Image 1 (cartoon, rainbow, N blue to C red):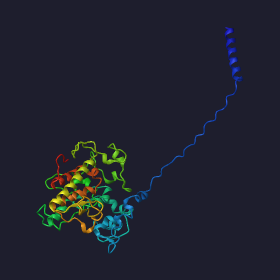
Image 2 (image 1 turned 90 degrees about the vertical axis):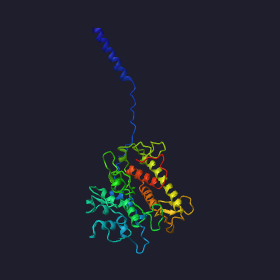
Image 3 (image 1 turned 60 degrees about the horizontal axis):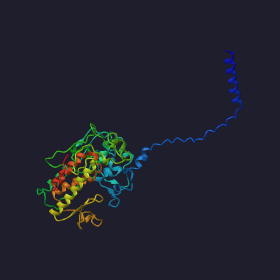
Image 4 (image 1 turned 90 degrees about the horizontal axis):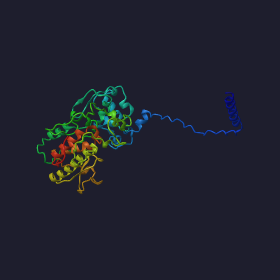
Length: 375
């Protein structure tokens, strides 16, 4: 037993001696790693966000169209949405009658913060559309709707035709002029509730465009200050590639008959729209012998196509070349075509209503609807 302990002690001694005599390991220097500075993104102020929007663009045509008129002022029919004082007048804050514009507005203003954030507009909860329909129980979007409800409706178009006592659908009348729906992106979501587009007698049309069980207000999809789309909202329900909401679709119906049920609903609408313009142009030539062309860039958008190339050339987009050979049938179809063109978000605002009005316009004016389907 003593021998075993002596052996253990001897071995421990040898290990200790070896360790003591071995060279000391060189210390290793720890690598220096730069510590990154924390970057805290500073949120933009509301004023900065507004400054990026079309509402703040003092050089834009909507705020400068009347600069050269005599006198240089914005008429009562336009002042509400093209100037700060005009909307204040509409609200009645200046002591004028609420709900209407009493006076022309001075030029040189934009849609400033106070226009939407004042003691009256904050309490707005309804909007009366050009059709006369009043939508109640609105939220903050009531302020947006006042200026994006458009200037016309089914009622407007029918009234003009009735007042002129026009009973011949296909006879041009010099007194009949094109009717511009203007900015109607806030009418489309409500569909047949407000009759923003022309709705043909005997047809039924989709009403308020619901997403599931919800109706989305303007400021749920658009930033209320920059006006830009909030793509995160789309992504809550749809698979969206970057910033291309046009690719979104829910229904699998092949409305345009091209066999593609994967393309976004915006492209189904695009086909209907292009077919309608072609039908309008064909109808114009057959009915009056005067060709028509369209451009979204210059009011009133429809011009005589002098060289018959199907487009509005720069020398054709003039005041003395407005298209004037309107028939009641053609006016209705052209109204709807322009309506959809001036709501580039119609595919998201109310795709069903949009396809319905385009399909009915196309069929009524004699366009080919074979292979197409109406939602």
